Length: 219
Image 1 (tube, one colour):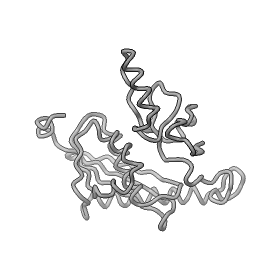
Image 2 (image 1 turned 180 degrees about the vertical axis):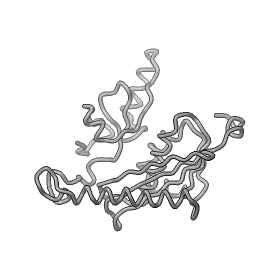
Image 3 (image 1 turned 180 degrees about the horizontal axis):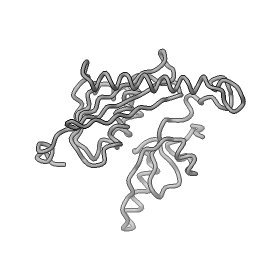
């Protein structure tokens, strides 16, 4: 997108929020998108131990994924948060690529901020309710060794390509990039990388990449 195109269009404002239970517990995220007089809202729950910063970055990535065409975007959050979570950088970079994204600093007041904060709390409440509900074994989910979330073993999202049989943890994976180079050398076009919930990738029959997932039991 050229600077001239960006100047001629109105920017989308993204107000993200993230919360978690205690220092490291389940969390909730939310994002409010404002474009002129139009508003869209999204929120979600995370059952695995997380942090408020990670939930905020999840909210930003989810909001960018919802944009259906290249636009100028103002993210109302502190950009320093990204630097503290290297494993989320590739996902944010992929979500940002079609757009011109500016991090304009955290907003402390306004309808978008307040609404995002309330929705993030809703996401946290949903996570807590799921963990405190009874599982198929008639136990509290968080206490059942079969149904409780496996902390540290499954990432929230993974990257997949349209024709790939495996999922990846990073756009910089050497196996992924070697595959792209082989496709280009044979005259083909590399497929786009898409970030999807890990459970969706596993349900679709994709396996874990032996290179970037080495040493991790992701199932």
